[in-house]
Image 1 (cartoon, rainbow, N blue to C red):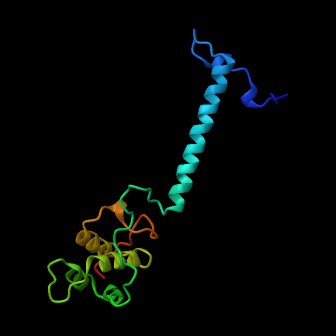
Image 2 (image 1 turned 135 degrees about the vertical axis):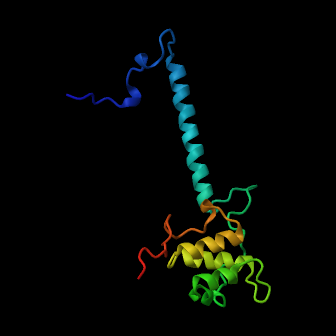
Image 3 (image 1 turned 180 degrees about the horizontal axis):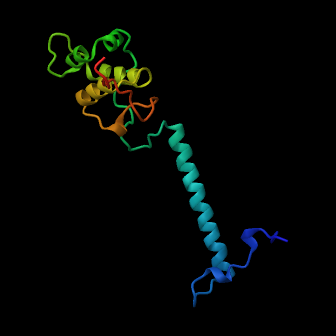
Length: 150
């Protein structure tokens, strides 16, 4: 029959390295400290969730204020790849798209068609790394490269 004792009540004599014997008080203190550390971690995770991942003193996770208001720019995602790349370039002086709107388009693209050249063009414009992309889309993008001559 299996040992039905609570693991916390089992004899821990064989767990300490040779020559080190823990007293019952030391074992109780270690368990208490471990429980306190667990509570601290749970509290930190809860606080992080309630503050949208930003703890006091940390830079804001979302620095693109106004990026959600992109209705008047959304039609740019319907352009061809080359035209879109030209449109989001920093050097586009005749009809520039503000950075926060490009970030909004990036979020829209990542949560929609998620096409590689569009995502890369916006990442290049905003100088973003892969781990800085807006959430929602999968970890991959949809490659538009032709695989045949057709």
